[in-house]
Amino acid sequence: MNMFKKVMSPLFEVYALLNKEPSVIKKYLKVLDTATTVIITVWVFAVIFPLPVWFSEKRVINGHVIYSNNNMDLGLLQNVLDITKEKTKTFTIDAPKSLPPIYLHNNDIVFYLSTLRFPSNTTAVYGAIYNRIHVRLNEKNMYINKVLDQDWLSTVIAHEKIHHLQYERYGIFTYTLFMPKWVSEGYARYVSYDHIPPDVDYDEWLRMVNAGESVNENFESWVLVIHAIDQMGYSIDELHNGEVDREEVEKSLLDWVKNNPQQTIKDAYAFNIYC
Image 1 (cartoon, one colour):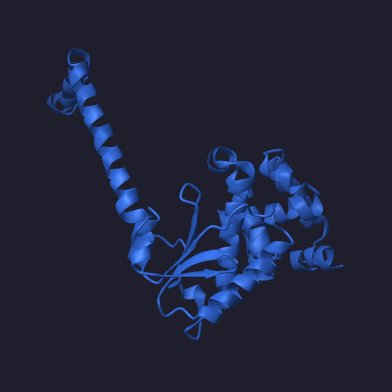
Image 2 (cartoon, helix red, strand yellow):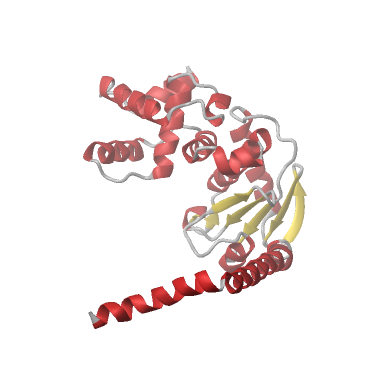
């Protein structure tokens, strides 16, 4: 009984304070709200905007403003943007009204601080509010024999450019609050990865689905968008405007797999695309 009193006593005291002194609580909340606003404002104007620029050299290529490490090869950047343009020209949502600046980071600390991200395995991010693409260049996938992989970098930038197009076409509120993640991420992969998943990844996803295991959410979104567009015939706008039911697409995809057991997804979708 004594132990119960010790545990419950602080709770009763807080309850009594809330009832007797609501003005005190309101003052604390107001101070907290003001402090939070000040911290975010300082972060935005003292860190997010200027920090990446301090560690980068500005270039303008193909209309893109690019901030990158000083020793970044200009020809390499030109090739990357050419590949990116080629990847997105067929499947883009619309012609962009503006091209977002691209920040290429060799420094993880700068990446995390300037994108409001704590250490994670995030490779790149498009900031809709600040209209910028940030890419971490020191990701292990970015290099082949210590040489920057231009195809991989262009894939990452193309992915983030699609998010920029989604934001421009459907608006910030739809993009940030109402657009299903499986659509926004799945479509970005659909474009940037040429919408043909590797057989080995697809087979592993299918195995995990059949086994009832947790699957890679981004990969699953990719496969669902591929199926919704290429097999079910949904338009890009129908997808992004929330007119496509995910459960319906999942059922249709699994039925398709069941009826085509000998045909890999790569064979099926490559046929649709190129024939």
